[in-house]
Amino acid sequence: MWTRGLLCAAVFITATHIGWAEESVSTSDARTVGSHEPLRYGTTRSTTVIRADEIERSQSQTVLDVLRTVPGVFVRQSGALGRTTSVIVRGSTESQVLVLLDGVDVGSPTLGNYDFSTLPARFVERIEIIRGSATTAYGAKAIGGVINIVTKRGDGPLHLQTRGEFGSRRTFQESVAVGGQREGLRGYLGVDRLDSHGIGSPEGVAVTHVATAGSATLAKWLALDAAVNSDRSRVGIGDGAFTLDPNRFVERQQVTASTTMHLMPDGPSDHALQFSYNLDNLLDFDEPNPGTLDEQAKSIINTQRYGLELRNHFEAGPLGRLTTGAEAHDDEARTTNFTKSHVTWSWYLQHELTPTDRLTLVGGVRDTRLHFFGQAVTADASAAYRLPVIETELRASFSQGIRPPTMNELFFPDYGNPDLSPEKSRMFEIGAGRDWWGNRVGGDIAWFHTRVKDLIQTTTTSGGGFRAANISRAVMTGVEMTGHVEPLTGLRFGAAWTLLDATDLSNHDELARVPQQTVALTTDYAGASWWRVHLRTTLVGHQEEPVDVNNRQRVKAYARLDGGVSVQVARHVRLRGRVENLLNRRYSEVLGFPSSGTAVYVGAVVDL
Image (cartoon, rainbow, N blue to C red; front, top):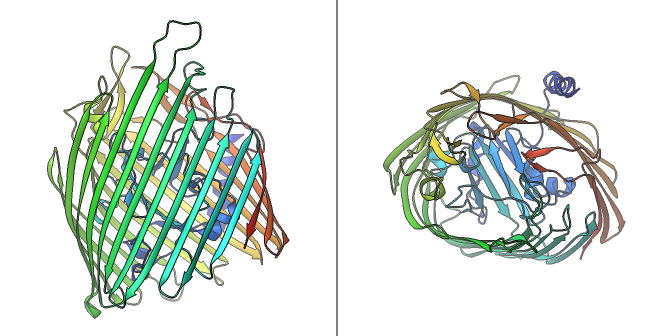
């Protein structure tokens, strides 16, 4: 049944050639103050841009939910709301995806990945996803891709918005936000609180998130931008692959801050100096179970990252646009098991040339100095050409990438391996896209091929333990197809399909934890100016996870249907309702961590 449904979805996308959330963004539009340097490749690479109005229509609670519909992106959540969540792109590992929050690298220096589980979507202005290696433009770690999250800056007259929602498993979420724009000033402040009981009695989640950002144009030659995000959470650990533990919880504090000074932002040259800071403190505490001789267990992981980047853009008329820059990062970690720090610095150069209005060429190089591994040089080249008459855009790209091992992969007791080498990659991509009838119909298709040398994976040892190891080479080859069609005013269908073959070349097994196929189908209908319905269907193919040295266990394929409705009941008031997992499917995204069943939520939004 699953195979038949998946094939039908694939045929549907292929036959109609329609795409969802795909957007061409020119690099010439990338110098908006407060944008934190959006896409650095323009139309020459496979990119997806999701804006605040799309997020609002989908009624997504977290950024994690927004990413589920993006082609090439697979979300892994360890069970219920608030539990550890990671994202992979085109078969990458989660530590190969660079995640930026207002220009700040928020990936953990110890684990390598970013946990999306508690980041609310309601304060986000847009999310930009570059699929495929982007190391040359964005630095080490971006072998799989880049997810750039930009929070709201405030626009229009001063306004206030409050929201409230409650629903299944005693879930309550409240938020208030105020923002606006006046002359050369923009500002925004939002506070969100989430409480949920969870699946079982020992489990629960409590999260407080604060987001504030703003920008100021002080003179024609000077502008400033700043953003701070703070997230405090407490999550009970009550279900999982092993045994029920009613006394274990994880407390986490995350703070990101960035400030950017722009010189000559509207001139032929633009210079930006950005300082960034990321604090991530985690406490994993397990009290003794009543009536047992268990001992108290406590694990502490405190990390900090300081960053400094100088970017320069030069417009040279017919000679194109030149971007140069240099950046440095200092990563520090204090954990129960080790204390380490390392510094990475690099310089980069990128040149964009548009010899005709139909042809864009982009090339770049980056020289990176890695703390433990010395010098690494990467380069990339890409091009886009819009065919005459049929106006279809063709694109092609080549990119090299590198990712050094994380601190845990090097130093964690009984797991780390100090003999690891950095991962190196090469990616080839070709694609085509086209919109018709005023963007009411559009589609995009991309083929990609990525080869990774010295891929780092978690392997099992003869003693039944786990250890990080370079597994020689791996190859990821796939096809992405996206599309959208608007047959009637207010009615929009979208689809995204990814077919992926990810193979470990040392034994020709499929890579662990990577599904071969994913499908996302969306429907938006605005029956009138005062009500709207949104439906989302997600289908994910099977994946395999290792359970011991010689055995793997298959995580079954699954399908999930979510929906939401919004009704304007007064000038300033909207009522909303949404259902997650409408068909009550039982499935797991991570082996041993079952998802929650059907959940229903209702709430209201007041705009003043």
